[in-house]
Length: 358
Image 1 (tube, rainbow, N blue to C red):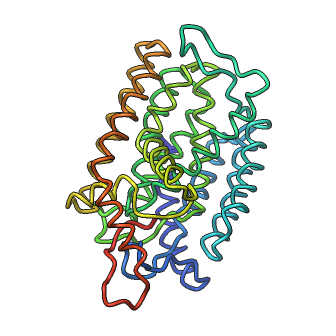
Image 2 (image 1 turned 180 degrees about the vertical axis):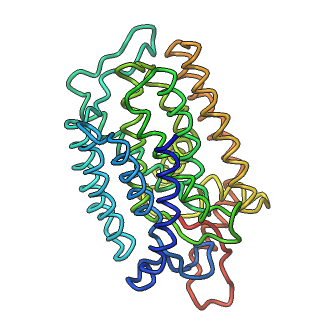
């Protein structure tokens, strides 16, 4: 409990202090056609969360071995994210650094996913493909959190719910990673006090790319730990724990590939945009998606508690993904219309709608 309280309080205090620094150093997310906020907003939430987790773990004497390597790579991602927020780095450069850092975590911090579980009735070992597969999974997780960060409180709530499921499983299994999971919960809650519209009228601070990238890295490492050691859960369980960010990222990227576009091009086709196209406000969309995420993560925890077979865990998630993909076909016209609005140049007599930040 001490780790949780320290992390939450330190995060809240740092956000208040770092907001002033952000204005001086121009670490701000400025409004544009795709962005919902109306005034420049500091992007130091990710830095505050990382520092809070670091302080809490130092107080708890929980930084050693794999955790030390993980936090070192997370710190490097913080620097990369800050540079990206300020200067807008190219996708290829970001990906290059992400691949390098996740490889270090996978090889040096026990983050390798060694098997896929008994998806077809028999366990599927990855063998020589374990490290490449783990790299793809980690980078995918990082970008899933980054891509869902398109509305006030969205990424923070998704990560908080996922982390709650992870912490629950670690607690049940008596895993050594529990203190860090609790510290993450504290920092996320401290951040959401200033980012979620449940507590403030508008977001005081964003996590920025610095926050979404290091959160994705840590979540990826947690997912790897879930498949090994004292937990030893089926790898397919990770799909349910990631939930909405994973479903959204997969469908958005598949749609962009189908339209022969870069999977990393920002647009307005994310799941909260789909909700908005049906007349649902961003605030209500975030709440609804948070509830759905809670259900998905809850199902994942129940699968773990009742030792559900790997094929049940995997194929039931695939069913959810396919159903969402099929339902999304009904929104083709409205999504195309939204993308057209998004391409309206600044200064036009037609104003683009204010939507999420991605």
